[in-house]
Image (cartoon, rainbow, N blue to C red; front, side, top):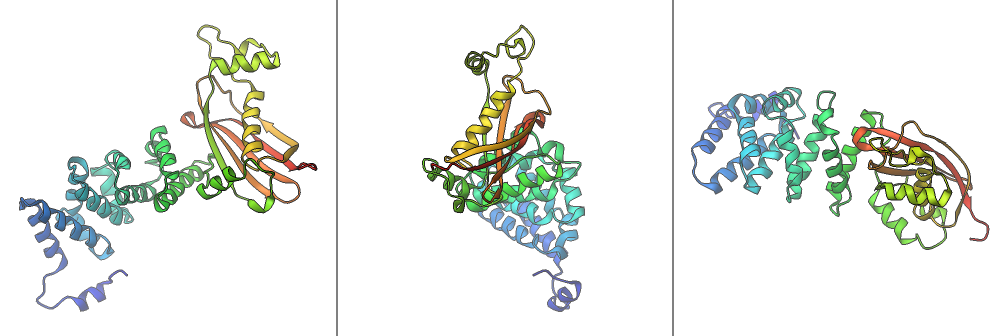
Length: 327
C-alpha cells in the first residue's frame, strides 16, 4: 500500500519530476488559482498524496499542511473542508505531523467540524481526534461538549460514524480509567422490542450495555421524600446549600433501567452490592449505565451513576438477578 525509498526510486524516471517538486507545483497552483473547481481538484490531489508516508516530509516542507489548516479555519465550501480534513486525517499518524498539527492548527477548529452535515468530513474528524488523543490533548477532548456530541453521533444511523464515535468514547474512558459505558445501538433496539415481554437470556449476551441520562430536580427529591417519609434536611432546599440526592432514589433509577430494559421485565433482584463514592446534587446531569456481565442462571450486572461534567461517580455496584418463576 505504501511506498518505500527503493520502490519510489524504481517508479520515478531518471529525468522525471520528483515528488517534492510536484507537490510544490500543486501548492503554487492552488495559491494562484481563482477557479473554485481547480482548487477543489488540487485539494483532492493533495489529500491523496497524504495517504503515503513517503510524502510526509515533503508535505510539511512545501506547505501542504498549511493549506489544509487555512481551509479548515477559514473556508465554508463543504468539498474544500472534506478534502482538507481527509488530508489532515491521513497525515496525523506520523508523530512529526501530529506535533505540527497540534502546534499550528490545534484541536478546536477540528472539533468544530463535528457539527458538519457531511458524514465523510465527520468520520475524518473523529478518526483524527482518536489518533491525536494523548495526555496533552485529553483535557480538551473530554470536555462535556465534545463527549455529548460524540454520544449523539454514536446513536446516529450511519454505522461508520456510530462505530467511530464508540471507539473514541471507549478510548477516552479507558485512558482515564473512568467507567463510561457505551450503548450498543443494535442491542438497544433489541432491548426496546422485547421490553414488554418476559426476559429470555438467549436474546442477550455478556457485554450488552445500555445508558440513559437524567437530571434530577428539587421537585423530584420532594416527591421521593413524601413517598418515603425521608425528610432529611440534606435533601431539601436550604438557602445556598445544594440539596443532596437520596441514595435510594439513585438506586431506584438503576432499578428502573434494569427492570424495564436490561435485562428487562421478568427478572427479579437476588442480591446487590453498592457504594456511593461521591455526593450527587440537585441539577447535576447524570449518566446511568448498566452492563450485563453474566448470563447464566443467575444474571449479573454492573451499574454506574456518573456526573460526566465533573467526571464523578456518585453510585456504583453490582446486582444478581434471576428469572421470576411465574414468568
